[in-house]
Figure 1: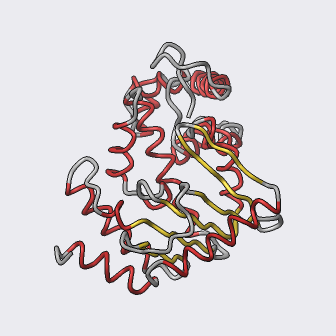
Figure 2: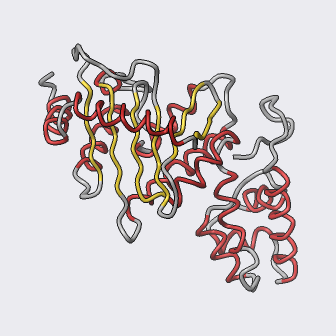
Length: 279
């Protein structure tokens, strides 16, 4: 998401001008339609201050809001044409390259050892993680990034169907970030995703003696018309790796990780037992 000048002491983000430019266009179409900010907000289900924030480039409108505004203001598709750019602007700068690949990926595979992957997070879990970040994000920044994470889950409803798999360290299933209730909701969501026909969730037992990846999380993505890539992320930095030999090494390790982890069925039973307090 864009870093707003003067907020949080962060440097200017390249996407800031995109968001401001959209806001200027939004305002032009609103004024041409003869509507006040309050009048348009009422029709969109927004407050006057929220419309002002969009026009000033301090808030990114949701995709459905852009669609509705384009229709109400007679923008002829000018506003909706920028939805994809604005969706990417919700993400931190370092993640945008990976987000573009993710959108077009036919396969998505991830190993995670610290927290539940963003692709699988509940709204409450995502908001909790972002609120724990230091230096702190503003409330507006947090809401933008929560929305971006939830939007990523559309990956699993895509037609034709896409394939996803996740290997999660058992320890992160016990970490009550925010509260035990937040964790419980997240575990329930993992069960739902694990029962999705195109997703497999596996748990890596903490007691496993033979572990092929002790140097951190990674993601593998395969575009429909391209070669598989790897993505690494740590401490607010992300890197897409396209070198075939390097990616092949990650793919080999991921295959071994899946063999070392609990099977998908056993993993779901394990999560069920956690929810029932049997572990």
